[in-house]
Amino acid sequence: MEPEIVDLATFLNRAGAKVYGAGTNTIRIKGVEKLKEVSYKIMPDRIEAGTFLIAGAITGGTVKINEVVPEHIAPVIAKLRECGCEIITDKRTVYITAGKKLKAVDFKTTPYPGFPTDLQPLFSTLLTVCKGTSIVTENIFENRFKFIQEIKRMGAKATIEGKTLVIKGVRRLHSAEVESTDLRGGASLVLAALSARGKTRVKKLEYLLRGYEDFDKKLKMLGADIIREEGD
Image (cartoon, rainbow, N blue to C red; front, side, top):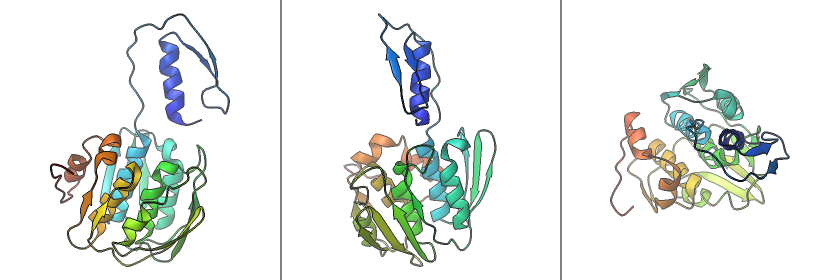
C-alpha cells in the first residue's frame, strides 16, 4: 500500500504490464509477453525527505525540502509539530523551523499510511533530546532498535522492552566513536552527531551509502560541519 508500490505499478503499466490494485492490500498481476520502452519520472523519496526534516529538528535549525509530497509523510509531519516544530507545507514543499524547546511524544509504526518504520530510528534519535519521556512501539520489523546501543554511548537514556523503546530525553548528547548498525540506524547516528557536543566519528558507512545519495554533501549544504573519510 506504500506510495513506492503505486509508483512502481504505474511505471510498469505504462510499459505495457497489467498490474491491478496498487495502493490496496491486494495486488493482481496478469502476465504479458513483453514490456515496451518508456520514459518515466519516479516519485520523490519520502524517507529521505523525512530524514532531512528530522535533521532540521534535532539541530534546532530551519530546513526547506523541495520536490516532496507532504501527504506521503503526513504522520511524521504531525509528530514533528507535536514535538514543538513549526511546519509549513505546500503542494511540493515542506518548510520546518525547529522549536526552541522540543517535547517528548509517543508514536508507533504501522503500515502506510501510518508512521513509517524506516523513519522510526531517526525520530527516536530526535526524542533522545526532547524534554520528557517518550514511548516508541515498533510494529513492523524486529531488531529495529539495534542503533539505540550506539546512541546510548553518546549519552542517550533509553531502555528496550520487547517491541517498545522508552526514551527519557536529555539536554544534549555528547561526542563518541560509534558504528552504524544498518541503513537507517547509520543515518540516526549522523543526526545524533550533528546535535552532539564535540566531534563524533561514525564508522561502517556502507549501509548509509546504500540508501542515501550524497548524504554528507547535502548536509554540508545545510551548514553541517561534516567530513567523509576514505575507508569509512
